[in-house]
Length: 308
Image 1 (cartoon, one colour):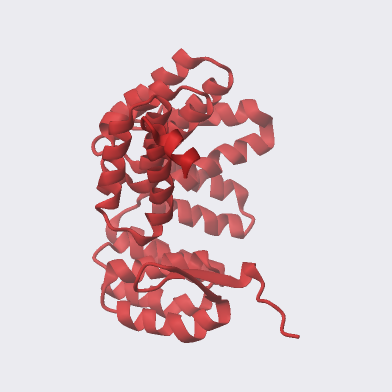
Image 2: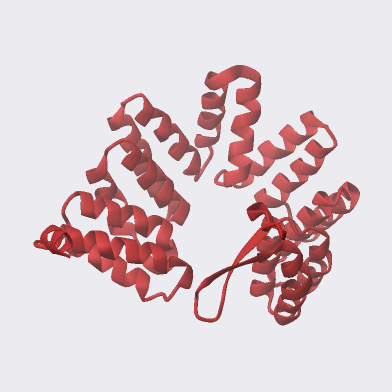
């Protein structure tokens, strides 16, 4: 009797018609990945995307050559060196990882994301003091790094509890241009039912973030407000800032749900139309769900469903 493949060992992909397919990791590694690497070999953006996806899928050794190629090819030297350093780090090649990061800093100057990855190298060596010092320097350069900020908060919370974690967030929030820490502080205020305080933090975050508003800012803000039942605030704060091309389905999904909740069916339809126009096969199932929900919400929708 042939056993079925372990679902955790399957890779999800889409065929030319946009239909989801699943194949085993071995099939992907042996039959799909080499061709994908060859196809993207001279396109930095596509190659970087392939490396990121492959790392997420656990293909580490297979990404050494692509990462080294990206370092030669990419005009975005920061992106290239970070991916190269991550591949080396995941292989346990800590000296090589540190070497490419320091070479970048020598040539281009220090940046927040490069220093955060250097801090990770120190952490892999269990050099906690050097890791924390380097991470703080990274946040001073770029306080809005998602991974760096979350790591900084976790380090302090692990030592001093929730109060220390909040104090760490406030320390980062005080840095010039810092908006992401305000999102997390606002989540805490929502949890304490201090809605005025949360909304003030959101407005500050939006004012610091610039235009277009970062997608993850709108996604976290709208999601947290939705979980707190503050639907009208989602439409007020996130609605006017939504751009389908920039913010995509994660933000659009929350706005469609909020508009439906508030009975603003035409607004929900407009967002769905914008998202569908981007022709993303991986969004079609979710868009079809909202199409159905919208149809049921319109006058006669429930009767049509019952009669069907």
